[in-house]
Amino acid sequence: MKKEINGKTKIIGVIGKNIENSLSPLIHNQIILKYSLNFCYLPFQVTETNLTKTIQGIKALNIRGVNITFPYKEKVIEFLDELEESARRIGAVNTIVNNKGFLTGYNTDVIGFKKSLQEDGKFVIKEKKAVILGAGGAARAVVYALLEEEIEEICIFNRTLEKAKKIKQDLSSFFPKSHISVFPLEKEDLKNKIEKSHLLVNTTSIGMAPRVDNTPLPDEKLFHPNILVYDLIYHPAKTLFLRQAERAEANVINGLPMLVYQGIESFYLWTGLKPEGKEVLEIVRQIA
Ligand code: ATR
Image (tube, rainbow, N blue to C red; front, side):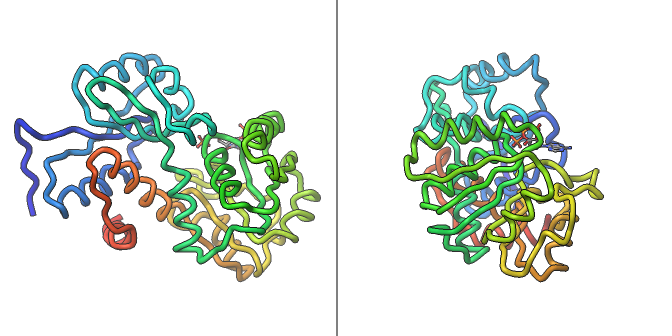
């Protein structure tokens, strides 16, 4: 199958700082090919100083929409005309839709995370306990997703405690019954909380290529077999964090299913077409 670009081809893409290793172009162009759509998904590597012009460029060039990735998920908000509710509450946007020059921001990471947990992790969120490592934009979407599904308790561990406190403050106001506690990344507290948790999620960039020898947990003895260990990183496919978790006989899940599912939701917003998640995940696993 060969893709034909012509005068009617609609452009979609991804905007980020270091996107050479992004799998999004591959995922979206595979979907485009499979359904013979007249779209093309491109990577746009953008520096911080050019972000304003880039967003103006989406309108000027009539680009149908873009994904937003690290480190612009929060910074783009000020340039948008409207925010969908969860993106506004979370304070982060990973998808922009351009409707004749009117830009709306969405956060499809929430549904991507939920779906990957439920379908690939076979995990029921309701009334469970989770430990979250990190307190950046990705952590915000993860915490929001868990709260929406009525998790019983969330413990956020972060190097910079203030950022974890801010997530608690921002998100607990939308979920009055939520139980969120925050801690610095210290071993004793981690041990106490991980022991009693059903889910452990790494939302930090620690362990991502090229620094594959790093891991966010100070001691691999903190893992246990009764916990689902989730790393949002997908490059490498198995981080040291996940390999150590597997050694402790925990079930693990990497960032690829979430990337695919959030991508499918974004794709739907741009094209009105929603491919089957499992099928796309299979294709991506074979070629990534
Ligand atoms: P994203 O939008 O992908 O979540 P981010 O907002 O930059 O990216 O957040 C990255 C997270 O990884 C943060 O929680 C960050 O900790 P700080 O809030 O203290 O900066 C965490 N992180 C990144 N590198 C780290 C490191 N070497 N040690 C500890 N935490 C780290």
